[in-house]
Length: 156
Ligand code: ZN
Image 1 (tube, rainbow, N blue to C red):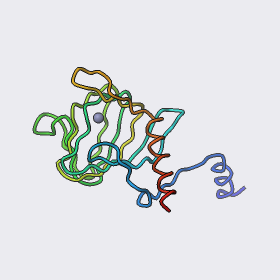
Image 2: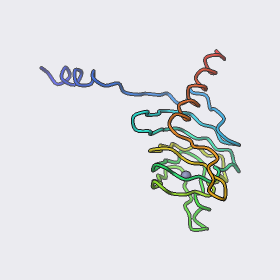
Image 3: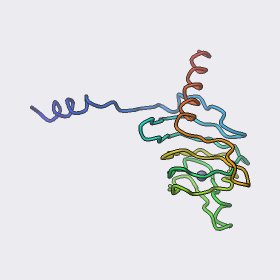
């Protein structure tokens, strides 16, 4: 059996994912922030998205109940107040890993920004007394993606 036949037989057991993200609509996520849901996993609880954040927008206080990874694609993100306040300021091309258990009081976007994001579990949004406001898990992310796809089809 030649190599290409062996490879084809091997790969037929799997299903790869390919998404032309430019063809997807942005869906409102929170004030000034939009999302494209690329993948969610019921098996691992992992989810992968793009976020587009308007200049001046921010993510509310939250706790990572799973590590997160990001890659900045455009703009500027200030994590934990940005580098001037002891946090991180991420620019296009920058990669970050956010450990499980990390608390982010506020993540700000001083410029219009887009970044790729994977979280290996839920994110718990909370108030200043650490009371849960809502939990963003793979199910909630999958629902955003499904609702967005349904409204895109309805608009066709
Ligand atoms: Zn965070």
